Length: 187
View 1 (cartoon, one colour):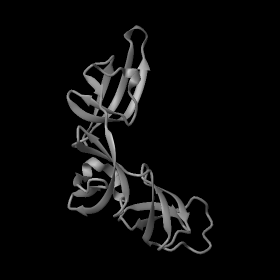
View 2 (tube, one colour; view 1 turned 60 degrees about the vertical axis):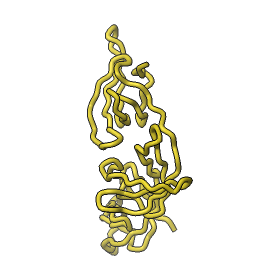
View 3 (cartoon, rainbow, N blue to C red; view 1 turned 90 degrees about the horizontal axis):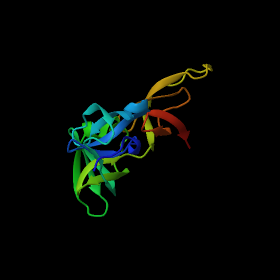
View 4 (spheres, rainbow, N blue to C red; view 1 turned 30 degrees about the vertical axis):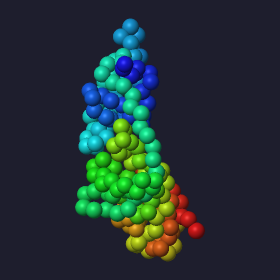
């Protein structure tokens, strides 16, 4: 039983040609008698590779149910990030390519959502916002009051984000992991 174009959503897990993908971009259009068409970008949940696919009707796709469990990020080992299941205490290495750019905002001990398909861990959902400490940044220039001027700051995880001039080393920041952007300075 195929998945209809109208049922597809960004972030949904689907089986496409027998492989597990996540819809990362989705554009739906209806063209008169030709019917509905969905232009998508799909990310393979095991390899992290992205491909473009256009769907008409419900051809060779079906939705995939992903079970959710809480995991904790333990440590970074070469190209893998190691997570532990908080209930079963099993440990799982996940390649950086699969985690994507959000991996640079992971701090040891962070709780994340593990998504499983047929008992196998296929995706880690990192929190949308994280709190991280600035380990290095240039001091702001006294008297520089131009608005919207930013400078780079290195966070405790090694990630570099653009921050306002008033941010200094040791400050705790709230960062949006989807965009890698500074949100606010926390007290």
